Length: 498
Image (cartoon, rainbow, N blue to C red; front, side, top):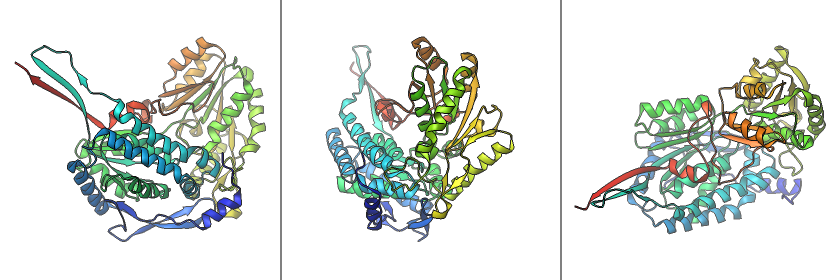
């Protein structure tokens, strides 16, 4: 829980120094070009910092440093127990600096400080610690073969891993990538989003402080079409791992094929259905959860429950309960611990979301709350929590990922119809079902085409559960022991004993 008040965080922000330079081979350096880009506070529209704008020249330096570190064995050949100890130290250092990290996260992308302190910062430390603990718990194999041979199945680090992470959960998404990649002995180059690069650069400082060797962890702030593309096309990068939009994910897979066929793991978009059956046990809980599922983090969540699919018999009752809760989700100053919903990440994203809202109204969608920009006098980018009711499945707001606080409600009469509506999407990241009947829960969860299904909850899970999607929501998995598989090569060694 965040115990501090608004004044505390404002004072702390006033004294905060912002990390601005790239981190290559253990040193903070300017971009080779000398160029910078602006990091803007979405709560005020004011400049936070001018950050090094890396491009292909910086990518060359970072890849060279990462490859040299990997080949030297300074990390890749370190005893598992030693890597484990250093990553555990890294997690402890992150925990010690969680206030600074949470504040940077809030200032940089508009996230409420209460969320950053209660979830983002501690979850980042937990992820690094969990992957560290896994290092000496995974064994290789001896295949059952003839007595005249010894057949070994071993896993080896891929080499140089480039991780491109999104702007909505910069800390957590970074930890999901670098945790298993570093645990398995790889060198890592992290490219944070240009919309929220500051915590990634602060993590670089903490990684060095924790004892991660130079060249093993590098951070290149910059744009996707320059630094990101250069990493994806580089012939000496062995893996590209990405979280972001489906459109960009497709381009990165193309770049893998155009270059060295590097491993390409994409965690992409979602348009997740939240299916509420007539026999839901706790309608109040379902209503509160449905609201949080779309308005948490300003709706800027890949697993946001952006489509509420509800049985006709309880539709009006559930909607009324939700509308009564909307006041609790009105946007406010992200540095106020009482704020539930902060600012959109930047003006471009705010205008994009408002464009979807206006388009839906023009197409005849029934707006029942919200739909407007608010707090414009602050200079920040705020949108009211927005709900459209009984929406036709053909509308853009049903089909496309909005990535904002916009919920569409659809109604069904028979469960099969509800499941069909839920699966009527090109995405398959997450889905939910609310029912008091275990048979309905199991059969519906099996029928829903999604990488994660929540039963009588939304967004449940921890580090032990894999995360990823079906269909155009991507491939590969973050979290759990399955994530470590992504960052290793499987080697078969046959030893003739005859």
